[in-house]
Length: 314
Image (cartoon, rainbow, N blue to C red; front, side, top):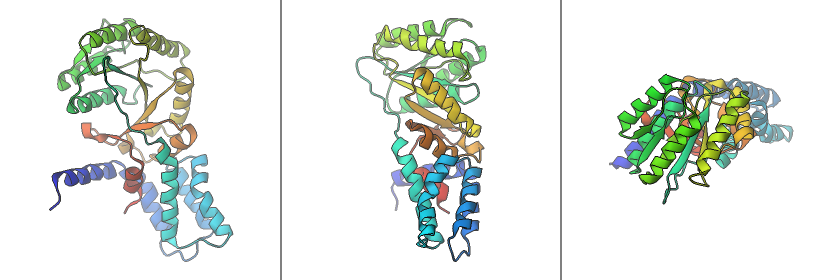
């Protein structure tokens, strides 16, 4: 009989596999269909594979890396059967993803671990904060939230709802307050109360909005007045459905304020999940977490082997 732990892991993997269903349909189903009955692996097949990968938003550069070895085998007339093609594809995917698969690790000591959440409107930032709060509480950590999105009253209300749901304090001020002031007050309070983790929300902004980027820089400066090492992690939340536009967002945010890690949300709602490979290949930033559903357990550590297995296994 399997133990509860192994059963639980299988259940979580099933949720991941189901969450990636739309991308799986583009990749696994179509690739399997393409390879079915093929005796020879030739350049035409490689070109068709490339078209399928690009359709899943894998991106030109990542696609080239994935298929370069296969193209070389075709030129040397060493290409094997369809099973060999899938093995080569799997190996190529892991080579791209494994270097960036770096789960979020909270280092907590005498001062709070400060997690600054940034991203554009609609990426799922506030929901991610709520799910992270639940995760940390389940790990036995004390948590506080800072409502740094003072431009939208609804954002503060949404964060307060997550606070009530998780039993954590939310520090907020009046609408229109200075976000840096809110986060300063929250960090001061979290420090006095010896809170383990402070998660700070910020207003959603386009990566092209220079004034709002200056605001993020101010938030980071103000935090250092209490703790010279804060924020300890600046997480950028990206919507997977944005496809290649998510890469432009990440690049601009990173250039403007410095990003420590990425959260890729809404993978369950898109067939463009291949953008994970493009992001990993082009940016090389740690991919901390992925979202594959509405449940709290659907925000999960990014694991390269698990992700590729969920995509390619039939």
